Length: 222
Image (cartoon, rainbow, N blue to C red):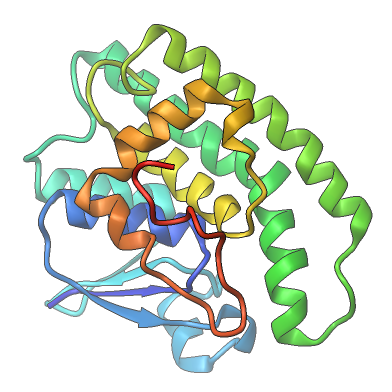
């Protein structure tokens, strides 16, 4: 059975988990604390980052988009890049947006300041970094609202990799209670839709000892 190295609140690892579940690929999760820099893990991925996917034949795959494209090629059904070349481009563009822009401007700050500093014991969260992430988050929620004004899902009429990427990041940010969904009804409507999928519900079962998510975290009607 394939092994996916992950850690609890890695949006990139969550994204790959969703793809595997959508494709109905059985796999084993293996927790990897990246910050420990284990030599055995660095041998799998010298970048020292999750996700890393090890297939049954022992072949190892790293790099979130490389893994995503690999999964789409080896298990084409159900497709997560849908439509003609332009439609598939749009899904890829949005995946890139969420993993780069949303990731670097919001998710990375939130996880670093509110999770890693606690586990590594390297000081108090940087309030300026948290304020910056909160400010940037509003821009991204506005963008999701803009997309959902015109589309049932983010890239079009059907669930695609774009929704998987956005949900991976939103679910991480929401773990810390940082999204006030009552202020973003269109984002909430879209998130309720994706939350109903088995692949997304699996993410919402994750818990970190000593750090509980808000009460609405798993609720489909919140």
